[in-house]
Length: 67
Image (cartoon, rainbow, N blue to C red):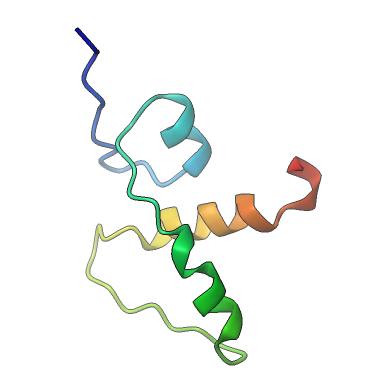
């Protein structure tokens, strides 16, 4: 039987979420939309809705030292 994945409550680090086998909702499909918006992007979402996690995903995506 496969081990159950954990829910990353309170964990916003993309690296930790991927390495420690937590559930993760992939939002990378929105990156082209982010790139096409204006100079500023305002993310308005409720608490615990993945804003910080999304920022760490973007950090990993754009960090050239990790490629």
